[in-house]
Image 1 (cartoon, rainbow, N blue to C red):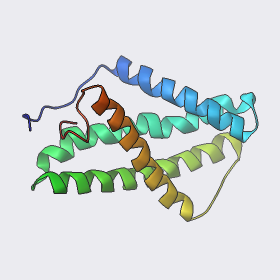
Image 2 (image 1 turned 120 degrees about the horizontal axis):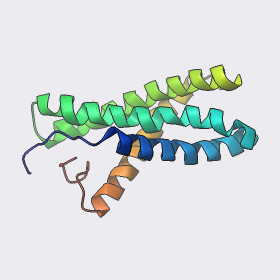
Image 3 (image 1 turned 30 degrees about the vertical axis):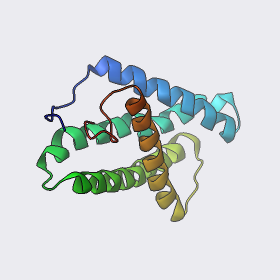
Image 4 (image 1 turned 90 degrees about the vertical axis):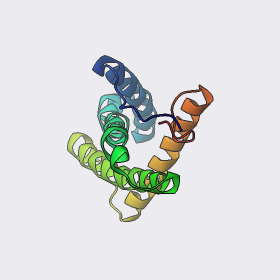
Length: 143
């Protein structure tokens, strides 16, 4: 494994990527919610996993990971747990935002579990894309 380095990127790059993801995902969600008129609200909701997920990942890579004792198994277990808990927390923010901007709510205890598992799946897919591009990722231990 190579020497650990802090991850940094310009805020402009982060905003461009995360807002673009939120716009696309918001468009899909707006279609499901009932139409194009809900796209701005749906985009605001989708900023939670895109922008919020970026900061969760950044916190892991730059603060938590360097402090972890143990080897690969500890890092993998910690990251999966963080993604699960982070997904649950981000989903709670999404639900509150959706309720505030649209009045739409979908209460239920299972939503948190599903969101946690879904966030793990999304992160694994994103890291697979990084791996295929030869970049630092969860799969090669550099990301």
